Length: 403
Image 1 (cartoon, rainbow, N blue to C red):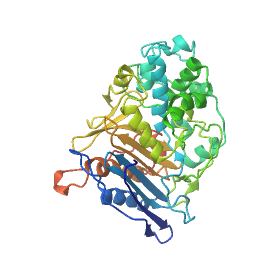
Image 2 (cartoon, rainbow, N blue to C red):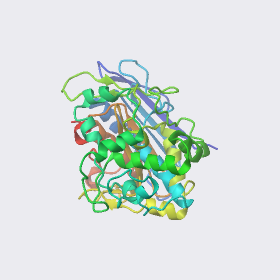
Image 3 (cartoon, rainbow, N blue to C red):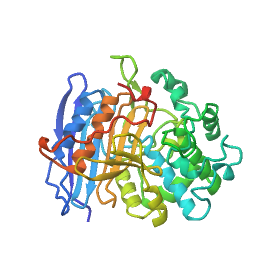
Image 4 (spheres, one colour):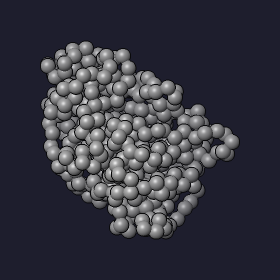
C-alpha cells in the first residue's frame, strides 16, 4: 500500500503575486522518534522563494508516515499552469551523485580502484599523474572549473552555449588549459571538471554511452520513469517545468532557459528528473540497494567544505548538519533556470526533493535550502535557535549564483 499523500498547490499570478489553493490536506504521521515535517513551514519557504523571484517552487517529502507535496507558483512564467510534482525538471549537479554511483559500482566490480590514477585508465588525459578517481569524486583534484569563465556573464554566457554540443574531452581541455587550483588531495575545491572526468571514466570502463550506463545501472533497476539523461537533446520528453534564468542586471526580465543542451555540464549536471524519482533514488542509494557496503562507506566518508562545520562533501555526495542535530545526505543542483535540493536521512527512510524554477538568484537558492529544516526537523519554537540555511554553494561559479 502506498503511503498517504498530502498535496497542496498554489499557482501565483505573477503580476499580482496572488495565489489560489487547490486540493486537500490531511495529517501525516511521523515515525517514532522523528519529528513530523512542518508542512506550514515547508509551504512558507516555497512562498518565500517565489516572492524572491522564482516563478514557481515545489517540494516532495517522503517518509514512513506518508508523503507531503507542496507546490507554489507557475511552471512557466505567465502561463497560469501550477507547478506539478509529476513534471520533469533539470536537476543540475544532483547528476553528480548518479555519476558517482555508477563509477563506484564499477569500483565494486573490480574494473578500477578509487586510488587508481585517472591517467592509468585514460592515458594522457590529465597533466598530473597523481590525480586519482577518489580525488575527482571528492573535488580534491585541483582541476580548474572551466564554467567560471564560461558563465562570468550570466545570460550572454548561457546563450553562447545554449545549443552547443561539446565532447567530454573538449570540456576537460578547457579545464587543463588553466593552472590547477590546489595540489591533488590537499584541499576541497569544487569543479565541474571533476565529474566530466568521471563521465569519461564511466564510458571507458563500461564501453557504453553515459545515457546507457545510467539507464542500465540506476534508472531502469529503480523504475525511475521520469528520469533521463537526454543530452544532447535540448528539449524534455514529457510534461516539464520551464526554467527561468535571472539576468545579472537588476530588474531585467527573466530569460526562458528551458530549451538547452546543458552540454557544458553533461555527467556533472545534465540529468532531468522528478521529485518522486529523486526521493526513490536517495532511498535506494542510502538504503544499500545500489552499492556494496564498502563502496557506500567510501561514498559516506566526508570532509568539511568550509569553516562552518555544517557542510561536508564525500564522494559525489553532500552532507548537511541541520540545527536539530540531524545530518542529511544528497546533493544540491544548479543549472540555468533551476535550483534543486535532494537530500535524505542516512538510512534513506526520509527524503526531500525541492526545486525552484530560476537560477542566478542566490536569495532564492538560500531560501529554498530552508526546506531541509522544515522537512526533517519539523516545527520548533523560534527560541530553539537558528535554523540551517545553506548559503549558495558553487554548483556554478559565484557570479552565476546571483544576488
